[in-house]
Image (cartoon, rainbow, N blue to C red; front, side):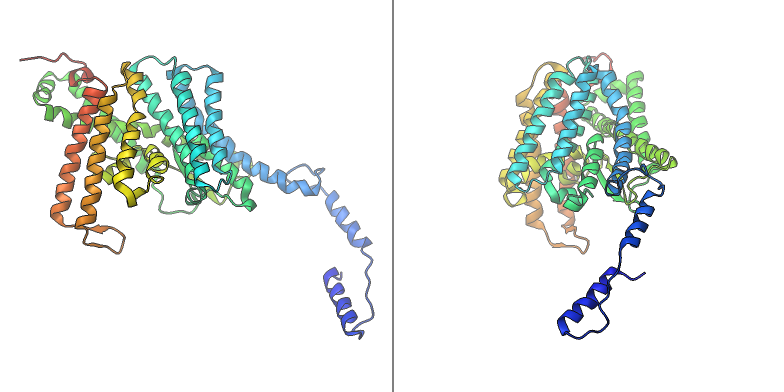
Length: 449
């Protein structure tokens, strides 16, 4: 057949030049329209063949969105069951908490351009969600250990959902979440997937080769969790080991530091299980020929890394509670000037962070212990400021890969200062803020000389 556009072009040229290149052409489009009508009446795969053509693509996109959303919700069930088992909230209470997390995820892709507006929305969401968690969700949780575990898991979940709200379009783009008007459904779908994960999520191409292997992550979590359990049992059961470690506060702190470094890795388990469950559910749905987002896949950022061997305060905070660290930086540090005004932003950030831990002591020991928390984070703030000032003063050059070149003597002194300050901070937290002792932690009677 003859296409419509070339015919119209020829007629336009004839009208412009006044010379007939060809006799005026007309086409009866009745046959073409009938062919299109017959084609539309033929059965098609996918959505219902009776569906109007204009809606078929929208329905197909909805089915594509259904797979990751359904997989994310199913993958969140283990964490929700853990909260339900330990916290014993009612189904309505748990559903309301989940709704608050989804609201935060939806707000992240609203396209709020004003940084002040994003900060206000993020602050309100954080205040409402954390208050609801402390006052309602964990109200029926008994036992200090159970409350501590649930408090940590839910805090990581809340922080992970508030950070995208504060970060705006730049942060979402780095995490692989589309925010353009042409990809509204994709952005909304990925925001829901992120909201259902109890940690930060980054969307990476399916063929990405620089992603950490699942087996490596699994081995790291298993070894650290088993190591923490084994060390605890050894100290709990062996009397001479208890006596040796209790003979000096330095031995106690070193044992507690090593134990805590391994134990916090257990808080990565909900995030790791979410990743495994998500991959399994999407693979299962793919077997039923249900389309999924074929371009990217979500990859969780585990909240905790190996902190025992941290070489600096900066490295420690890059591995410790990553969602909470990211939240505090965007909520306090950057608005106050960041590194340009580190002498203001750093102490304010740490001291305001201290106030967020008052409820932890209240939940575990019945007292807020404000002065000890302020002293603890004051020490951490002082060490962070000394490190930033020292790095800028002795900095020699920047290597090709972007790392600072520092004198060996300074690096050694920074490592020693980091390890000493972190152990002093651990002493304040365990012995003063939480009111525990080495004997209480391991369940044996402390002998006095």
